Amino acid sequence: MTMRRLTWLTIYAVAMAYLESAVVVYLRALYYPQGFAFPLVLLPSGMVAIEIGREAATIVMLLGVAAVASEDGWDLFLAFCYSFGVWDIFYYVWLWVFVRWPPSIFTWDILFLIPVPWVGPVLAPLVVSAALIASSVALAGLKRRGTRLHFAAPVWAAAMAGGTIVLGSFMIDFLAVVRGGEPAPFRWGLFGAGVGIAAVGLLLGISRLEPGAAAGIDVSPARSGG
Image (tube, rainbow, N blue to C red):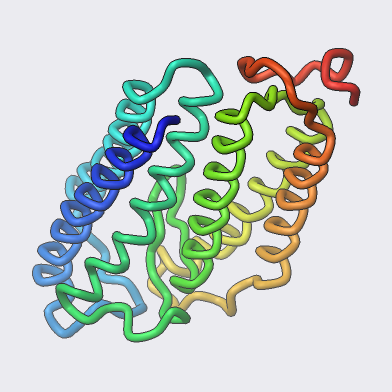
């Protein structure tokens, strides 16, 4: 990614976050006129379906602009991770600007609805988004300097395992929430373990990279020295 593309990805993600947060402000005005809080107000099934579609469309839009800004598979992957992280952080920035919410980074929120509701303190997705931005910028910088990005299969396995554990920490208690109850205490230990596993895998992969011609994503142990 060139600096020009990175700049436009940032502008797009910030603007998209504005749009996303504006929609949420409208929804909360309709369904939570006294302010958003748990237990949740159960939305009509048709509205839930629209919300799920809106969230899916958001991912498609982020993926689409990443594809336009990319020249190969690594560019697409890194551009998507970067724009997703910026979008997610600025979603909360705009919400705070509009309605002074969340009052704290430890305030609970509904984070996503696919495939089931994700719930957790605002701090948790902010940590994930900051990690996505930092890692994608670091890897894009290495690629721009000619480092060939190729990770062994165990590195990808660690990243996916860590990501799965993080997602599990968001979804593990969703039934209590959808049944109208209060969320259980957040599984910070599970969340931290997932983030740690993914971070160790990434750092291990970076430590094994060697300067050379940039290439597409390669998970072959034979070619990556794994």
